[in-house]
Image (cartoon, rainbow, N blue to C red):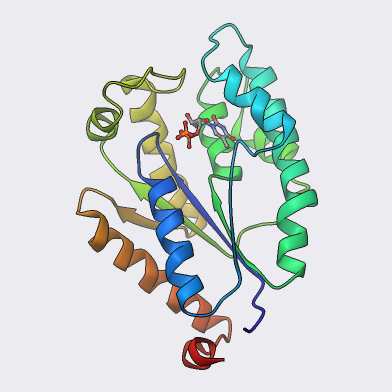
Length: 210
Ligand code: TYD
């Protein structure tokens, strides 16, 4: 098994399918013989647990959320992601810095993209960021029956989607539409990841049998 430090982040609005696709990608890359570590944000640390609790609490000031998401990420990167990359894992994160930039900067005018980027500047950048794009009407439909969390509101998610797409174009992130059936979407994701791995010098064939 070859050791390839490679960091891939999934982004997108609530209900875009990032959790499903991150898991499927992990399975695909593991079958190819890579060491793969799957993780998520909010993370599984104590700060992450607190953040998940806060997702159903509308009284939390948005600035508190922004600072906690940044703290959670800082801890997550330095204690978990960086270590796994150093051990030669491909790390897949279900959400990362872009979630904070997009969600937190849209909460109140006082929170700017620049400030969110600033408080998140001590963590490593992903080698690949994939934005899963979907109409919020469809994504919220997928959540029917579940209690809604504080960001799961159609007019807010329309703005979130818009900013994700804008930033993806400016920052060179991959955008994948997830209206198609899961298998087709996953196939597109796999192709993008393999192309990116090859572009950084990974020999997929050798990897498969190595
Ligand atoms: P989500 O992926 O929806 O988790 P789950 O499917 O387990 O409920 O993420 C939780 C929410 O947190 C989502 O609404 C986006 C929000 N979020 C932020 O606002 N900022 C962040 O930095 C992160 C990581 C998530």
